[in-house]
Image (cartoon, rainbow, N blue to C red; front, side, top):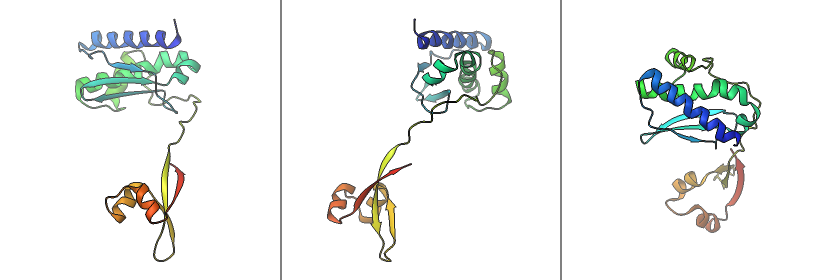
Length: 165
């Protein structure tokens, strides 16, 4: 069995424990391993579905801490949301996390690879004063009207620049 498969089973066990302890049903949250960057885990509720995302790098390199604290941390968020319709790191969340075996801490101290930043296109726009500014496609469209930025860039000889945010 793979590490992620074993980790998923431990997440499912924590969910079952929470359901029994609090007398609630968490409706089998989606569990995925597609979280990137410095976050070890993430809990969300969207369109009636709970989702737990975990960082596979954190699972591989920080197994013990992820099992001991991150699983309960994220499950505590969905328990709190199920009971109170919000998620936070308040005293109630801390109590839930501790009841599920976690340490009640908000953050981890793992050394994880930062997420790659997204590259986006910016257009160099020269103001009447001669000042050059970089603007995005939405700003560009609002300046010149509802025309595709690439078409306008050709028409007005604008130079696209790659800008990292």
